[in-house]
Image (cartoon, rainbow, N blue to C red):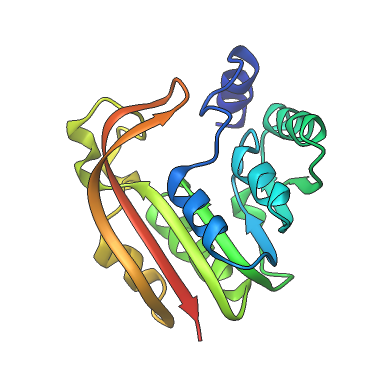
Length: 197
């Protein structure tokens, strides 16, 4: 899997575009800057945007190619991000953040549940969780995402993963994606914002 992503990032000038995810951008633009964690951050489009808006950004991914491109992007925009090489399997909550953003982080159920618990444990009291992912219905579309239904999400399962999170927004909608070559066109997406009280 790591080899697949390294190759994809190496072979494409941009996999998911240079602009931040729209839902993530809305969150960043509407909240006072603080500290934020971005797991599986890829080429850094969201991390760099948050940093340019004054957020203190920690990010990680298991792809060396993704990290290199993210740091190059940050340097070009004179943004400061802390980007580590790390896999989700190895992630444990060692630090508390004002926000954690999970943007298209698709995982098998057992790993997803364990990782989501660590993501929750990474939130400060009052901290926000921001999630956008493909819904189960994405199998009907050809606009990106896993083709394995076990890796696609539904609102009840995601809410069960975060039983102590105060849900502020949870919606599934059909949305037109325009995020680089691999997220393009009509899509079924799940969006969630929650707060640790």
